[in-house]
Amino acid sequence: MRRTARLLAVIALALGQAFFPEASLALSTALDRPDVGRRLFHPRPETGPARPDRDCFATAPDGTRLHVRLHLANAAFPTLLLFHGNGEIASDYDDLAPLLAGIGLNLAVGEFRGYGLSDGEPQASKLGPDAAVAFDFVRGKLAASGFSPGLVVMGRSLGSVCALSLADARPGDLGGLVLESAFATTLPLLHVLGLEPGLLDLRETDGFGNLAKAARFTGPTLVIRPHRGRRGAAAFRRLAGRPQTPAAHPRGRAQRPFFRRPPPLPRRPGRPGRPGARPWPRHPRGGPALTAQPVTARRAGMPRRHAPSPGAFHGANAMLLRHAEESDYPGIIAQLDAWWAERHMTDMLPRLFFKHFRDTSFVIEEGGAAIAFLIGFASQTDPAQAYAHFLGVHPAHRRRGLARRLYERFFEAARSRGCAVVHALTSPVNRRSIDFHRHIGFTLEPGDRLEDDIPVHSDYDGPGEDRVLFVKRIGQASG
Ligand SMILES: CC(C)(COP(=O)(O)OP(=O)(O)OC[C@H]1O[C@@H](n2cnc3c(N)ncnc32)[C@H](O)[C@@H]1OP(=O)(O)O)[C@@H](O)C(=O)NCCC(=O)NCCS
Image (cartoon, rainbow, N blue to C red; front, top):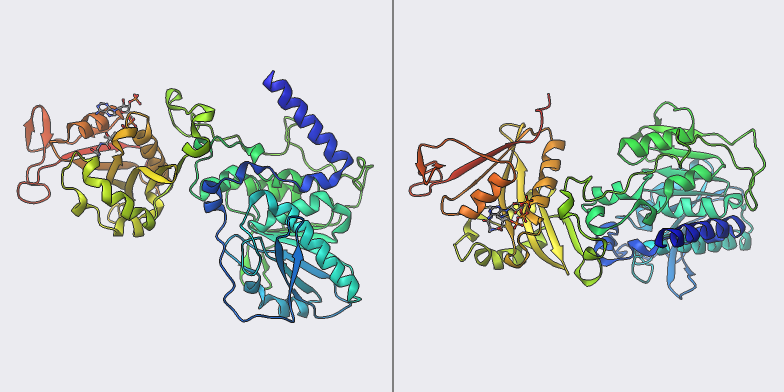
């Protein structure tokens, strides 16, 4: 019943988009949640000098003022409307304007809501609609000033969502499309940002649909350095046609790979509202070209019985696995001894671990509070080895699979750095930790004595500081 309803909804949406192409500007609101937004957007205010000659404001239907910086050099030039990346603001592109003018282009930079001089809060589902507001605003400005109406739209990184939404909804209005560091699929992007789509119960269909939109756009397209990830890069390469030699970026950096799709020549009749759909390569099985599988808990390495039920990670109790941040430190250190049954542990966990080992350290938060964490790193002495320094789960959240999940994520990070072996240790009194580590596949390294059949390394961390050493193989050493 639910599947039929979902199918009908998909058909209705597809029909809606066929007859009312503007509808495809609308983006799913599934990413409009604070835990995702915090990772997806990195807004910063404009602190540079005001440019009243260049700063203009378009108004979104909800009244939000959206900043557009216009660098109009020559009325005869076409204009490049650029949507920036997620850590950028419009003024970051001030230095690009004269370079573009040198090759015969005006520049307009549209700023996301909540960034720079734009009002409001960043919102994933508004990226497309706001882009259309900026587009119409710039078009109006060009017309009013007697400038050439030619508009090429460019999206960099997260800005690719804006550019592709426009390309999809208004294909006939764009003189061309430029994508730089664009991403094809959304779930891998979230993963790179430290989010676990499986834990968040997000599917690729909840994402931005960049790849499908790029596939539908038939106008001239330039793709510069697609976002890392072989799947996305290959997909864009296929869309863009034959690879070109690496080219110089207007800002001077060599960019690669660099692909260009020329204006399509053989056109075939398009569907209503679309000028000439081009038969872009299809997935061999006939499905949409190369969309990612949703990252389910099982695929992410979690045993099925730990897989969260879909509702369990929603709403106020949403659970999020992400990289550790320095800002996690005060909250965790305040509870540390309590989590270790009032043993004095805080001396062993200085702030530096949160500050300097972020990429291999992880936190699970629920309702905004850290409820489990793992601090780890790859050995500098032996790159094949990784070390899990600290692992703790709030007592109220134990036996929910959180520690296992953190370890799985850490193994993944360690493997990606070429590590084949993970080490950890604990005190002989910590039987819970010993049992847990054995249970998840660690073995105990032989010590110099046995204590209740547990091999112990006497004075390992100094006089009286005995330790039990764990080791687990997680893969083949690289190189
Ligand atoms: C040890 C600790 C990290 C385990 O965390 P957890 O979230 O409860 O563990 P999980 O739920 O992920 O358990 C994973 C598996 O280990 C098993 N397990 C967990 N604790 C166990 C224990 N004390 N004895 C035996 N098995 C245990 C679970 O049953 C589960 O098995 P399954 O996947 O086959 O069902 C947690 O108890 C803790 O934080 N303790 C205090 C701090 C500490 O000692 N840290 C250890 C490193 S110094």
